Image (tube, rainbow over all chains, first blue to last red; front, side):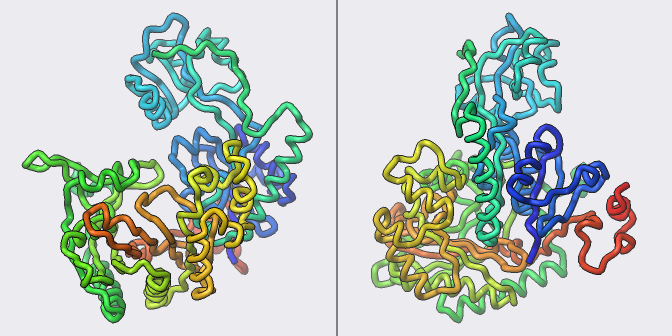
Length: 227
Length: 318
C-alpha cells in the first residue's frame, strides 16, 4: 500500500502545522532534518512533503498529496475543491480591503489574490481594475500605485505603521486540514483516521484555551464603508 | 510565436497515439455493441440557450461560447449527457423505450480554476433511457466496471445517491466538516455522515426511496463501495444514484455517471435515464511520477547513488 502523503506549508504556518501532527501522534521529521534541503521525508508510514503555502492546495487538488494544511486564502484563490474537514484556531487572520487615508474612490486594487478580489468586486457590484502583485502589497496604496489593496491582516501593525485605513472585510481566513477527494474515496479508512486524530487534538486545544470558539467571528470594530 | 504552440489543453495525436486511441475505442465499441447499445453522433457545437437552466453556473462557464453568423450564442460541446437528451427527446416514443445508446467524441472544457488547464477530452459514454428501475442502475454499474476490466485494470467503484444530501446538509457534506448552520434535528445524521459511520438505516427516515434503492444495489453488487457522505454540486441534473470508477492501482478517476430522471422531461419527453461517461485520456495516459524522490523515500533497496545527479544532491541533504 502507498504511504499517506501529507503536504506541510513552509513559512508562516509551518511550526503550528507540524505541531498539529505531533500532538495527533504522528512522527514528523526532526528539526535537523528540516534544516537540510530535503523536501520529502518518510516517517512511520507517512510521507511528509514541504511546499510553499500557496502550493498546498495544488498538490492536494491533483492528488499528488493525500492531505495538507492550507489557509482559506490559498484554498479560495486556487478554487481548490478538496474537502476541508478540520478548521484550526491558530494562524487566523482577515482579508481586508485597505486604502491610504483620504484615498480617492475605488478604481484600482493591488493584491496577491486576484481571483478572490474579482469575486469580492462582483459580489459587491463594484467596478475596479485589479493589479496583481507578488508581495508587500500595502506599498501599492502607500505609493498610490492603486487606490486600494486587498490583503490579509494579522495584527494590523502594517496597516497602522503605514497610516492606512481598513475599509471592508473580504473574508475571515483560517487554516484548514484539506483532503484530496480521490484519497478520501479510495483510502477512506486511513484518511478518516487522520481526520479523527487531528480533530481530537483540535478539540483538546480549544478546551484548554477558552478564548477560542470554533467558527466564532471576532469583532474587529471597523468602520466599514462601501459604495 | 504561435508557430509551434497549441492553445492550452489541446494537442494533436500523431501516428502511434492515434493508433492506440483507435484500438481503445474499438474495444469499447465492441463491448457496448455486444451489450445491445446503439451509437448516436452528436454535433460539436450547439445553441447555449437550451442548456442554461440545466447546468450549474460554473459548468456553463466552462464551455467555450461564441456568437455564430446568425447572431445566436453557441457553445462547443462540453458535456454529452444533456445533449443526448435534447437530441433523443423529440424522436422517442413510448414504444422505443427502454433504449440503449452510446456516443463518443471530444468535449472541450475550459476549467475556470487555476488548478487545471483548458482541456480537450475524448469521451465514450452510454445510457439506458426509459428504465427507472434499480435493475437499470445495476446494469449500468456492471457494464462500466466490465469495461474497466476489459483493459486489465482493477475497477474501484464508489456510489451514492444525491437524495441523501438534504439541502441543509449540502454545505456540510461538500466540506466534510460540521458547522453551526445544521438544524438541530439533522445534527445527529449530519455528524454520522461526516464521520463515515452512517448506515443505510440511518438515512432511511430522511431519504426513504434512496435508502431502499441503495440497499438493493448494495445487495446485488457487494464488491462496490457505498459512500453515503458523498456529495458534489457539479452535475446539477442528477436525481438519484451517482457513481465514480477509479483505477485501483493509480487511483485515477476513469468514469463517472448516475441517474437523471428529469433531464428528458425538460426537452419534452418524460423518460428516466441512467448512464456513464469514460474519459479516455484519464484511463490511458501514463501517470506522472513525482520527480526528485529523496533518500527518505527511496524504493526498497535503492541507494542515493541510483538517483539522477539532481535528485542525488537533495537525497544527500545538500
